[in-house]
Image 1 (cartoon, rainbow, N blue to C red):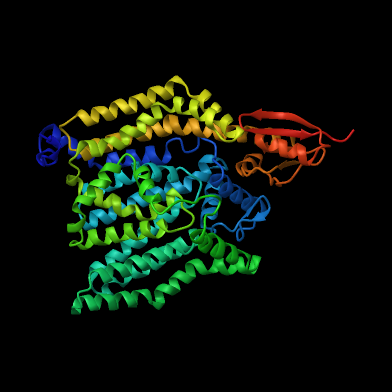
Image 2 (cartoon, rainbow, N blue to C red; image 1 turned 120 degrees about the horizontal axis):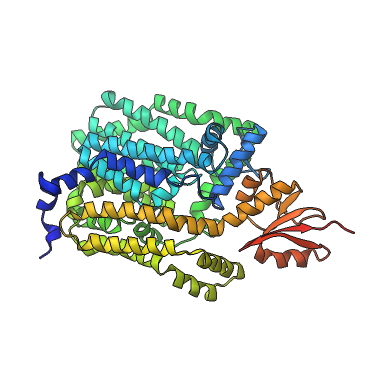
Amino acid sequence: MNTDALPMKDAAPNGWRGAMRRVMTSPALLVLAVALSFFWQLGTLPLYDLDEGAFSEATREMLVSGNYITPHRDGEPRYDKPVLIYWLQAASTQVVGFDEFGLRLPSALAATLWVLALWLFVRERLDTPTATLAGLTLALSLQVSLIAKAAVADALLNLFIALTFFEIYRFWATADFKAGRRFVLRAYLWMGLGFLTKGPVAVFFPVVVSLLFVLSSLRWSKASALALWYWLRAALDPLGWLIFLLVAGPWYLAIYLDDGAGFFKSFFLQHNLGRFAGAMHDHGGFPGYYLVMLLVILLPFTGWMLSLFKCYRSAWLDPLDRFLWIWFLTVLVFFSFSGTQLPHYLLYGATPLFILMARHREALTHRWLAFVPPLLFFGLLLILPFILDVAMVVAPRPYEAILFEEARYAIKFEYGLAALGGLLLTVLMLRWSSPPLWQRLVLVGLVQTLVVYGEVAPLLLNTLQAPVKEAALIAKQTELPTVVYRTSMPSFSVYRAAITPNRAPQPGELVFLRVDKLEHLRRENPTLNLGRVYHRGHVALLWARPDA
């Protein structure tokens, strides 16, 4: 008999089961989850390259130059993203200091507001326990916590996308254009801020999803035809577009006046249309890429999400469920056919999954479906030393073998203990038959957060990035002219606190490079007399001795 299927487990109002349910849907637990997932270890680990280093260096150069219009990285315009995240990072570092914590704080705060916006919306549409549970799954999901702790624009963008969609549904539920217009105007405000964060994606998905949602309910009745008319009025609302332009327009005009058409050609044509048309920076994939990545980014709630498909057909009869499914599926299908594919793109459509999982928590009745994904995750973490042993042998490039060796060497007893503890606790949750599965998965989510940010993230970032930081601080101390050679690790410039040109060194200069680039440097510049200043793992800092 499968005791997990008994509904009385979650419905018990009294006794320890009732107390357990109250704890698992308590706002205090949600606050704890947010603190662990978004703020714990926020400033203790070095910035990772490429993304955090690039954003942080652009922010540093903005503060140094006083140019708050055109972001620059190592002296060259950086057209990858609009300006809002740089402004927020600049403000944050001016208040709390220019360091990892100050650079990452805007993302952590944005993710916290994302949880709060979700909680308020679900409480308004459903109830407080469901709202708290939706917030817990959001905060404890692996990919969400990763972007919340990163000095990049993604947490901020997801906040504005979620806010926009919540306003869209509130407007639809009002069923009266005049009474619901305030929601329309707020949606334009959030889209304007999203457009100032990452561009067209903040407008594209709300427009497409809202139209598909209205069309999905059309039965050519008077009410449905009126809903379509309301959608058209909202989509063409002149005051709404004025708000949008007042929010986003001034900076876009300013960068055109400051830098000409360069940003528009690079950002809109290359970084938007170009990313969809082809793979950029070798971030290609395949049509099923996001079906695979969905299983990873939602850990440890992968099985919970899969359980939703058993109630997929009936969900279309409920307007809120139908809205959430259309939101998720639109994002999934669109990016599945994009030339450039990165895991965090799918988060634009993940918010509705957290709401659906919380609302339909009783649909999760199969314990193996629930616990196999986190068991596999902790199992892989436990055997990571053996995986690295094999990777060192089969690595196609020497510097990768060095990285694997460094990571293997860095694994200490505490890491193995944490991975084993996570695995054993997950097994315990699997065998514990009394609380509902969703309650046990929330506990596994807390354990996953402790293991990932207590041991796994420090292992990876200290292996990859601590040598870069150490080399940069040495170069900064010497005060010698410094360049990088065929190496894209912009956090070096952040920690060195200076622009670092990417070229071959001249005599008397320091050069920072990845170790596999050293042979290229010597072959192209045979007269250089290079001396080692610093070498650790996959990077080195060399001095081109002056000519005798």
